[in-house]
Image: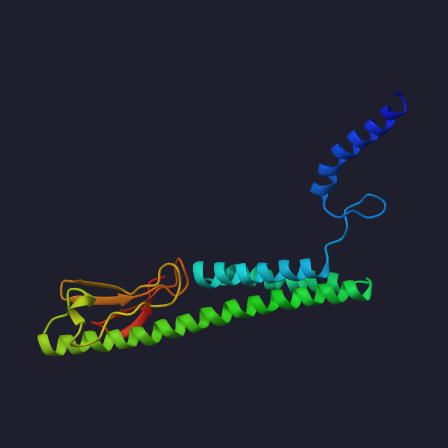
Length: 201
């Protein structure tokens, strides 16, 4: 009966250690955590890049986060990737850097496209407001007064999650149109009385 006691103790100890090892993930021979696999780091880099594009191009619509990351890639990431490390590790780091760099570039490209779309659509609305004024002798009280005679519909300024509309104000016979180019500031404004574009801030 006594000879079974050590086996029971070992089995009990194995059961206690199993959850611990499962929480740590794969372990090396010396018990230390194994290095992330190539597929894991690739997946992480892609997810980070997608998150950057979503946040800085479609949510913030600024490019500030992308700019800071781009500077970090050049000043820190690239030198570290080129250190004397095994060739597979170096190749893996450079691949991840390339994914991050592509994400940074994509953010600026999308922001530029959105701002170009906003400027083009603003010009169409300005022409419609002028046509309304020429016909009626006064400015419309709101942009909805332009549809459908002078413009089919009032479009969004840009394809972002916030601050993506045109703002139109009229008071004392004067009218202005503006939109947000660089949130929260950087707002181009068209003053109809002066017939020119300017910036609020």
